[in-house]
Image 1 (cartoon, rainbow, N blue to C red):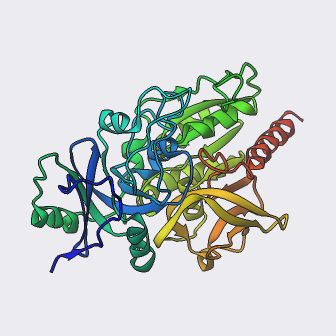
Image 2: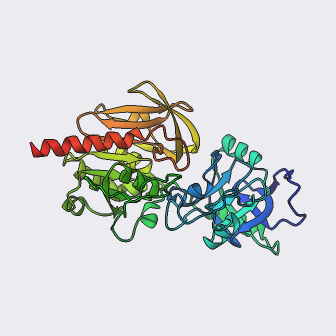
Image 3: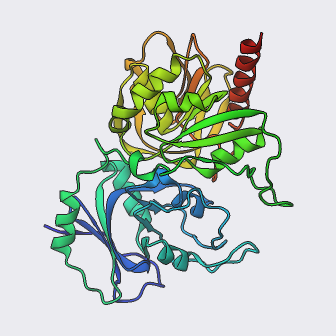
Length: 398
């Protein structure tokens, strides 16, 4: 039996719904379609951030997912060409509570609706996003199909069938789809400053090779802030080719999908890199794959962590950091070996948020210290990586 969600209280929604969301448990949400007319299937998750919708939607880590935004007012700063986290948008669909707000920002080029259409992202407004969020919290992140048709032409049975037939994110390697097709050197743009915009870094004292599992541009910008040259390589680039580039350190990026699936080819590469005693730093998927390389295991979370207000305790310093997060898998605590130290822990559910190898300059975090959007409490991790590279380079010279 098809279950219908409660009607939205929005007064803006017309009597004829042009957008629909069908969940695997047969629940249906109706609203007004926005963005691209079409149909997309993915995992339905929610993000609690109050700002940064363009950065969120363009984050490659959202490949295979439909994002439900809990903040009701979206669109007020429009969109621009500079704040993208990836050149291609991989998000499957977006869900908003209210009609898209008209842009009122000096940097805006086009409104969000047109930007979604241009990037072929299906969207819906007018849904009861709170009811959907509560459903995800109670039952976990479901598979769902989102569809937009101006003619209100929906075959619900077909949409439900498409949803149930999709295998989901578990055992799915998405890094190989979102990774760069050609190795490149980051042009050196730094993080954005209000007075100057994105300036270029002219000093490049250290060389970082970044393995791209779905890397965000703001990570590259922070490396530029710390005077690093960054060469971005495909996720399947072997250790021998990486080492030929003579890096001072290796970065393992964020990305989408199941870390165990990506690990089938990533783990042997990282094992070879660890043997060379180079500093290694991982974020998000990079953190999970590093843990797998060190013998740990990962698992799918019930609903995941997605937002810019997640408290994490630094177990080394004893302080609490407010972090930006976006992940649906986690490292299993009791699978860690004795030579791994847990450095950070979530204050929401006590899950692992950071680890380091005790006898080598290798560490990682589950959350996003580069933010975009979100707080900047954890930028020090880039500084720690840079110090580690400098120390290692000095040791080699002596």
